Amino acid sequence: MSDLIQMTLYRRSTHFTHSKHRVGYDISDLVIDDSVTLDRDTNFSATEFNFKMIFEKKPIIPYTGDIISFKWKKKKMFYGYVFKYGFDKNHNITVKCYAPSRYLKNEDSIVFKTGTLSERFRDVCKRAGIKAKVVAGSGHKCKAEVDDGKTYFDMIKNAISATTKATHKHYLIYDNYDTVELRKFPYKKLDIIIGDKSGLTGYDYSVDIDNTYNVVKVVKKDSKKSKNSSKTKTSEDDPKTTTIKSKTVTMPSAKQWGKLQKVVNAKKKANDAQMIQQAKNELKNRNRANKELKITCVGRTDLVPGNYVTVEIKDYKKKFKNCPILKATHHFGQDYTVELTMKVGQSWQVNGSMS
Image (cartoon, rainbow, N blue to C red; front, top):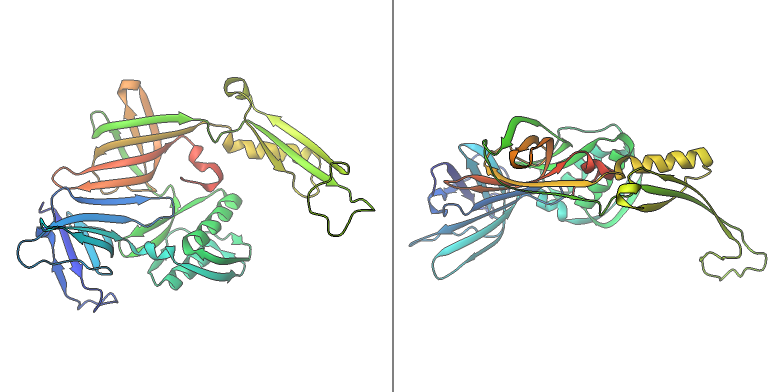
């Protein structure tokens, strides 16, 4: 295997804590070249680490639950736990690991008091038994809520969505070696340009309006109860006693794309002017095409989700500035490459979603 890789195995069965005295097995020489992949994304899922090993006489098998530490050029890249392993008659061992945030997939039932995103993030990480750090938090208070039988990931996602909606600031969960971090999104601007003559080896660019709308209709429903209505009657509206009042805002893009309409309920006691403003607010981020860029380039350890970079494609005379990285798959070996999925423009800001 490449001498650029350093991989260590720790038996978790005897060392559940981060002990300085635990014994590690250096398995770097057993790892098959170009088999090491590291997958990260912003879609509330744990970092995944895969590799293959080959042994001759005495196999060192990473068992489920064991700890794997991985460094590239002495830089800490991954720390996590074996969730799957297997071997065949050719003495090949395949290993799949997940970073500590994998334990945020645990389900729980919690009654949250009014509190900030940072507080809820620390709370669920403590319950999951993982190290946590708030790199960027928010003072916005999320409403009290009951989360029954939900994953910790979903609980954090709810808090992030509520905070983003109120503050227009975005956040992501990031596995930084053995610590799960709450970071702002985008996180760090990389002062490089990836292009045809600077590391770019492949690309795929797409534009779609599948989740776009350019007309918003805000409706206010009034259902008058009949004097002769039965107490056991269903909650369905009665056409005879229901009226709907609405206000509609249409954007110029309807001429280009056709009418793409969304209906939303008016806020309580909203007047006509407030209904129109509500429609305009809904259209701010939705009245644009979704632009996605996928590239393959020479590997860099800082090309990770949350960071953003400029990409230049001369064949199409395109220069995409400050594209936030949503997903990154690193392939380590003699030829170190990375596959990136990125957002172009501002469409990634829609409703706090980065997927």
